[in-house]
Image (cartoon, rainbow, N blue to C red; front, side, top):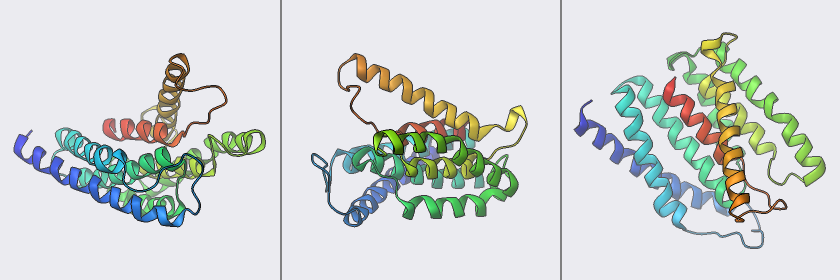
Length: 221
C-alpha cells in the first residue's frame, strides 16, 4: 500500500464527509416541524462524526482496494451511507431524496462493481426490501412507525443495490449485510438497556446499524 496516496485519499474522504454534513444541514429545511427534544443546525454529527467517518472509510477502502474503479464506487457508497446514518441518528428519518437516487445509481453502476451484475443488484433490492418489510408493517401497526419505518425498508433496497445477491453461498451479500446490521443493532440495544441509557419504551433508529452492516460487507466483498 502506498501510504501517501492512502493518506491523501483519506483527506478527500474527510472533505467529502464535511460536504455531506452541509448537505444534511440543507436537507433539514425540508423535514417540517421538529419533534420535542430534536436538534437542528450544526452539531457534533456534522462537525466531527461525518468528516471522521469519511476519512476513516476512504483510508480503509484504499488500503484494501488501491486506486481502482472499485474504490471510486465504494467511496461513493461511503458518502451515501454516512449521510443516511447521520440523518437517521439525528432526526430518525431516511429521506427519499437520498435513497431513490441511490437505488438508481446502484443499478447504473452494478456492471462496474465487484461481484455485481444488473440482475444481482435487482435481486438484492428485492431481498433487501422484502426482508425488512414485515418489521415496518409490525412497527406501523403496534408502534406508530416508531423505531422501524418505511425509510428502513427503502434503505434495505439501497443496500441490495449496493451489495447484490445471488443464490450461491459466496454471493449472499445483501443477506449478510442485513444479518450483520441486525446483530450489531441487537448488541448495541442490549448494551444500552443494561447501562440504562435506554428503556424498553424508547425507540431507536435502526438505520445506522444497517448502514454499518452494509459497510462491513462492502469492505469484504
